[in-house]
Structure formats: structure tokens, C-alpha cells
Image (cartoon, rainbow, N blue to C red; front, side, top):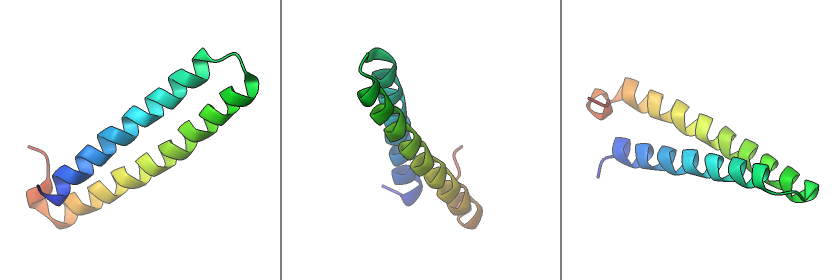
Length: 68
């Protein structure tokens, strides 16, 4: 498995977590829990943004990792 493929899998996992945390926040009535899930979603989004930036860097430096 290439680095590019591993990065894409990590990005997909992060996107799934952001979606799950957002859904959990919408579904709960407890305001403390809602805030916790919103905070977790925001933290995960920051990680996702960093992974996407890293993937772009990898693709620029190593053309063989670009998606076809």
C-alpha cells in the first residue's frame, strides 16, 4: 500500500468521524453532550484539513501518488 493510498484512507476515516460527531450533536437533547460533539467535530475537521494539506504536498512532490 502506498503512502498516497494510506493518506486517502485516513482522510476518508476523518471525514466519517466529522459526519458522525455532527450527527450525534444534532440528535442529542443534552446541551453539554451536544457541545462536546460539536467540539469533537471541530477538532476532527482541523485534523482533516491538515491531512488534506499533507496529501496535496505529497501529490506535488511525488506525482505517482496523484489520483487518476
